Image (cartoon, rainbow, N blue to C red; front, side, top):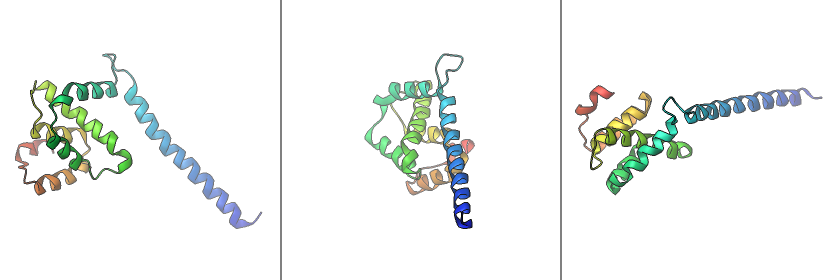
Length: 140
């Protein structure tokens, strides 16, 4: 067997195992989120509950703001990120017993639901929209 073919096989198997490990990692994370907690509901169940309970509070402008905030997320993961953020926003709105969705809930929910590395994009986006960040500095 030629040496280049042996190297190709070696590269192929390393890539195959690496990609399967990466995929398995993300599938395992999703599996852990779907496991029920002590209250009998999983994180995903609570997320869906908050979204359903607050869906009627959202206006088209607020949905547009949420879409602008999740724009930097790759298309493949955008829907999942939007659901996670909307779930956190809904949780905040329900805890506050809000009768309407506000910009404050959207920004706080985004900050709490996303990792710190995504906050740079949030700050840039909110500055472009001339939104004051001072009430949210303690969350960053």
